[in-house]
Image 1 (cartoon, rainbow, N blue to C red):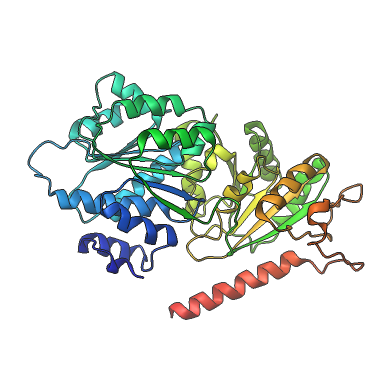
Image 2 (cartoon, rainbow, N blue to C red):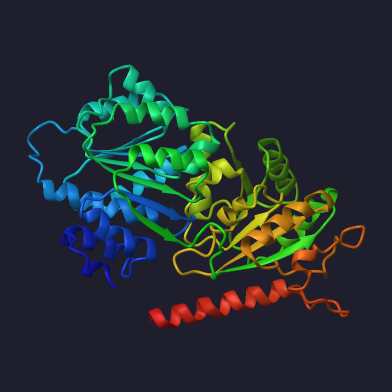
Length: 422
């Protein structure tokens, strides 16, 4: 299956070709034909599966088919709601890239920055609006935005909306939308509250489920270190001495922890920046841009701030703090191994986090390979959970460092990819 097999405008195909998009991902292959027919859709897909393109491409195509009169003032025809600033910016950038040869105007609005630039963009006329719930409601209440003409509504990462407490704001926004519209809802998980929302806003939706949240992508090699909590920073510094780690996204459970990890890395001479909710929007965007450009080697993030970080060449994800709930582990490591590239996910586990490890390995139905030979082993012998001990082979001899083996595998696969391109 090729993108050109869809009934898509040649200008959209041209933009996709320039992005290197030839074969649609499973979520795109299943979603695009449904959305081109104007049906509602309920999509369940983990991060990194290409769902932004899965809804952006058909929205652009459907808008094109409507053949707007470009001489009349633009009105908002498509609204995409996202839970975080970073994800909203990423979605807006995607619409700009896919629709670069079409005569549509898109913009993004979010909190944490002055309103005037966003208000001026809205006054100039917008076809496609990407927004976070809080700023959208704010500008709606000030009569800068009206949703009377919305034909396409996308609620992205609905489960994260719930986690962040936005569900009531989302319901207020939905109440202002026209009854006649196409609605798209995407969520990695389907808790009870989201299922109830689905029933209230979707009309006979088609369901698309790709790579459920319990699965991890095959292009990501996983490994784990048992380490005392106090030694995690030393182990992280030791791992990052490896110059083949070109870029690393390090996850912290808390904002304060992210700042501390960053400070420790900087003291060790490792170029790092932190990104979390207490940072200003300009600081967050600068940190993200520096990371994407390669100026910053290590980005330390909390889970909420990491939503929307989309870096195709990200080589490593490091779980400094083990995540809980276990689904978060899948979201985290899905930040690497994207766009056909290989990635490595490294996890630190201290005594207090062993139950988290047990939950994660139950969810993904596999054991995470353990690296035993390292400079900062846990003080007491690690307790292997009963549920997964049968899957993890023990050895009397020390491991020869499987992390190095994963790195060699990654390099060999990249060499193969480069030779194929030639």
